[in-house]
Structures are given as structure tokens and as C-alpha cells.
Image 1 (cartoon, rainbow, N blue to C red):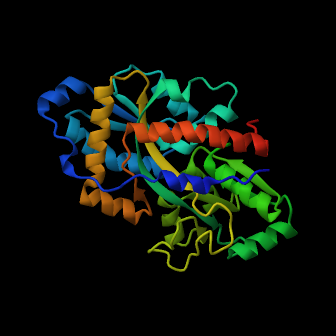
Image 2: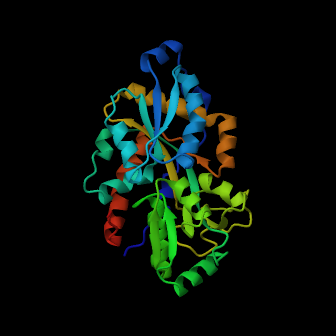
Image 3: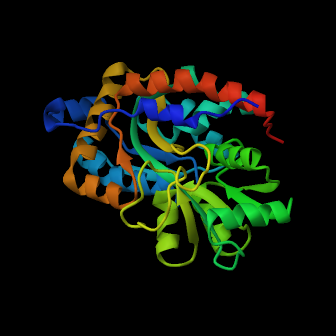
Length: 330
């Protein structure tokens, strides 16, 4: 199997410096672009990274465009149910999906019956945030460090269950890569989103979770999960004793969740640009930057073309690696 270079994703980190002068929109423009309620579709259950981020953005976007903006969760099929809903919506920008775009990059290679074309039926609005993964275990699990986890897994092949946010998601792939490189036999348990996978480990339904820090950090802070490592370049400020993947000797040290926004393919470019510009302005607000930083996230203010280029590149990259690893959706 070829090495799965998720670290290449780091090369697509986009400039986070944004100024309010990027766009100025008048009430008349708002009325022309958006004339009824806007829905932010989160294709995962409530409480995950995408859901938390969407609920931070929604009220500010509502104020910016002069229309009600609601968040609606549509979990299922590793994010495909929600993405499909937006792909088949009216081409007016009133339905947008906020999700881990790594899921979209893997979908064409994983699902032979995919009901939408990622590149044709969805219009990129922009990449908005990167958040590292936290590797964590249930407090009762007999391993409290990465080395202990590896040793226990080797001594108990096939008995360690690892929760993930869905078959073929990046959390699933990272777990598979760790197991492959460390010679482990793990059982992979898919859930309807990262929050559900973290909660399953909290309750003891699964043993191990690899999930975004935004959704997982609160469980670690409260002692409901024991953090083993984080996939950021440096240790997190709120978890200074938690080693990085690189320090712990784990593969894919730059892996994580890249959160992006897309709307329906065929939406007028002016509407897509308006959405992108307003979201960039929202991300530039000090309170948003503070809240995202507190959740372990890093703002990525890319424009539509940035996300489009990222998807084109990683649909191929992830497709090659999925086929090489022979990962299939049952």
C-alpha cells in the first residue's frame, strides 16, 4: 500500500488574514440575492464540528443578508444524504452545505451508487476552517498513552473497536492507516458523524475515537475521554500535556478536518461570491476568531476557486489511496 499522504493537505492551507474591505453590500443587494429563508445543511448529527461551526455562522449570516438562516441536520451515508439534498436544491444559493470536505473528496471512489456529481452538482463557496483530530479513549480502557494503546492492540487483535464519523471518512482512513503502519487489527465502527462517535466512546460502546478537536475536546476537558494525541503541528494550548501525532510516532501528523461550504451547482456566480464574501467577513470578526481558536480550529478563508482546486486535487489523491488500500463500502 502506498503511504497515504494526508499531510499534503497542509499545502492547501489558505491565507487567514481577511479585511472587512473585501466587500460592501447594500440592503438592495441583499434583497436581490436572497429573498427567503436560507438553510445551512449539516450532513451529520448535531454536536459535531460542522454543526458547532454552522451554529456560530448562522446568526451572523442572517444579519448580513437580511434573511432568516437556519441550521438543519441531515445525517446519513457518510454525509452524502445532506450533500445530495443541496445538490438537488433550486439553483439560487438558498441551500448550502457545511461539512468536512474530505468526505466529498472520498465519496466518488467509495460509493458506486453516488446520486450526485461532486464537481458538477455542487458549487464551492469556500474552505472555512481546519481543526486537528484528537485520538482519545474511554477512561476505563486499559491504555492511557499511545504506546500503551499500540501494545494493548497488538496483544488483543480484533478486540479494540475504533469509532469514526462514517465509512470512508477521513477519520476512518486515518484509523486504517495507523493500524496498517503499526501492525494492528482494529474493528471500525461507523457513526452518523463525529459527535456520535465521540459519545459512543464516552459511553463505552466503542474503545477508541479519532475525531475533530472541536467536538472531542469538551469530553477530554471534562474527563469523559482520555486524550492520547492530537494531529496539530504544535501542542494545543488547552491541552499542553497532549503530545502531537508526530511526537507520539503516529503516521499522518497533519491530518484533520477541513470544513468547507458549498451550494447547489448552477447557482449564479454573483450569489456564490456574495455567500463567500459574507462568510469571509464573518470569520474575520474577533469574536468568531476567538471562539474558533477556543475550539482548536484554525480559520481558512479560501474563496470558491480555492475549494474547487482542493476538491479536484483530492478527489484524485484520495481515490488513488482508497483503491490502493482496497477500502470498500459494504
